[in-house]
Image (cartoon, rainbow, N blue to C red):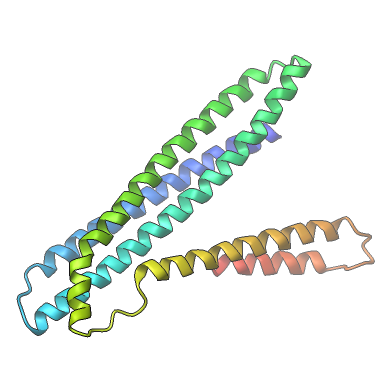
Amino acid sequence: KMVARSKKAITTAEWCCAQIQEISKSLAETTKRALESQRTLSTGPLEDKADLDHFHTFRRLYLGLGDLIFKKEKVVGEVERAAMQSHVHLEFCKDTFDPMAKEHKEEIELHQRTVTALEQEIAVLRRQMQTALDMVRPVEARIKTKGLDLGLHPVDELQDTLIGKSKKMLLFRELRRAAKGHEMEPPSIGAGCTSFLDSTAADSLQSM
C-alpha cells in the first residue's frame, strides 16, 4: 500500500511539473508580446502609458513566477516526504531480508532525481524573477519621478500572497489532524464534527 502511495506521489509530481511548465511557457510568451508592443509607443502621455503598462506586465510576470515557485516547492515537499517513507521501508526490508528492498531503493533514487530536477527549475525561475526585477528598475524610477501611482509593489504583494497561502495550508493541516482526532472518539461525542471540519478545510483550499 505504501509503495502504491509512493508511486502515486511521483506521478502527481510529474503531472504538476508538466502543468506548471505549460503555464510558465504561456506566461513568458504573453509577456514577450506585451513588451514588444510597448516599444512602439513614443513620448509624452503615450510614454507614461507605456511605462505603466510595462510595469503592470512586469507585475503579472513577477507574481506568476513567484506562484510557480511556490507550487514547485510544494511538490518538492511531497516528493521528499514520499522519499522518507521509501527510506523507512527500505531499512525495514533490509532487517527482514525482504526482496522488496531493491524496489524501495529504486524509488528513493527516483525521488532524488525528481527533487534535483525540481530544484534546478526553481533556481531558473528565481533567476528569471531577479532579471525581470533588474530590468524594470529604470521604468519604475521614471514612473516614481513623474509621481504616477504604482500601487503595492509586486515584491511586497507576492510576499503577502505567499504568507496568506502558507497560513491556509497550516490551517488545513490543523483541521485535518483535528478531524482525525475526532474520528477516534466514541460516535456519541462530537458526532458530525469530522464532516464539518472536512468541509471547512475544503473551503480553505478552494480559496487559495
